[in-house]
Length: 557
Image (cartoon, rainbow, N blue to C red):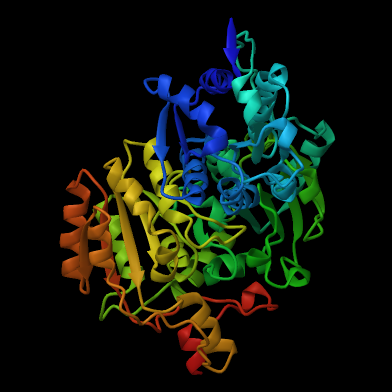
């Protein structure tokens, strides 16, 4: 059948099983929006308030569902407004398709109104980029883009289409999507080496990363833990891969990880690294990281092997597939002395906070209690992000969505909207610092427009909390440009954007507001006021070994 390029875009999205897209229209992409209008019964379009919000929403949709997220934007500033969201997805290996439209082909390269080379701009932050100048290759390009985005180590792909291609016509033949694969690069010898190292270990420790979320390896991780009776720590991106109620779980690893997980890394004799890239926020001083241990790394991306930390052995491929094969070969063993040592250490060095007043840790504990630990939690970036990872208890993957690699302030609200679209059965809460909330608060208008029942919890300390914490510890308490004490009223702002809003100063007010929010059929905002000098602990100083984590009590000594 003969279709226009715009109609082909929509048909290819339907082919790929896309049911929701996020975007903002403009001149060059009008033909695509006209085709979407004619297919609004098949594809739901969420009009965000800003293109960055559309990219974050598509990202949140992808993380919550495991499917490819899709966002749309027009040329020029519309396309460039996607860049931060694309970079966020790239750093965290999120499958995302960004479709933009550009000026007509004869006008390319002539500094035409709202013309930018968005493929060139995004080259360092995408898995691949296409500019489509011929309608006859459009369908093939879109199909290939989806395969690239979802296969191997996932990531964003951009498709830029000239406006005349969206108006031109050609024959279109429907195709079933080609199943993507995560190609294995390991050998039987690699598996044998991994099994031997695990069986020889007396003090093994599992360092679980976000790759285990992507590969769907939760069941295999659980089997491995039970088979070898080993402790488990997770990165920020891996929250929920392993049920955190399990006594084998020792907490998050890294700069703001638990002292027990960091101690375990430094005192184990085998570090089993699963889908993790040895980020600087995890390793601290990389030369000292797990320096007493042999390291086994399992990762799908060969480029991550020996990039930040030298390893003793590696198995390259999909984590779930590899662990399935390793588990079948392993004999059951136990490590009671090692487990008892860590359990004792955990009792000596628990997470703690001031229980005499409202704090973010207490907010997260109450939220955990009132949602039975079953909510999808999105976050922005900063202190609240760390507290959300430390004090909410995650029992399944894809329930903690956060910008880990890029650290994008303003990410969480858009991501929460996308997550709710992907998982309407789930309670979705975004945890935002007041500094982050200011950046993309306009997406509350999106949530209220569509009556999307997300709960926005503002951790309001009237400062840029994490930056202030660093200024306190390392910059002689010189609080340069980190104080937000001004005339902004977040409750009235939220109400003005169509949301129900509460100001919270006590635990009683928190419980009442959450109870109302959980019943509400639209967006709810809680402005939770905490002290400006609350700090996140434990903490590892930059350049230090992670076993040198300190907390408030250490500072007083």
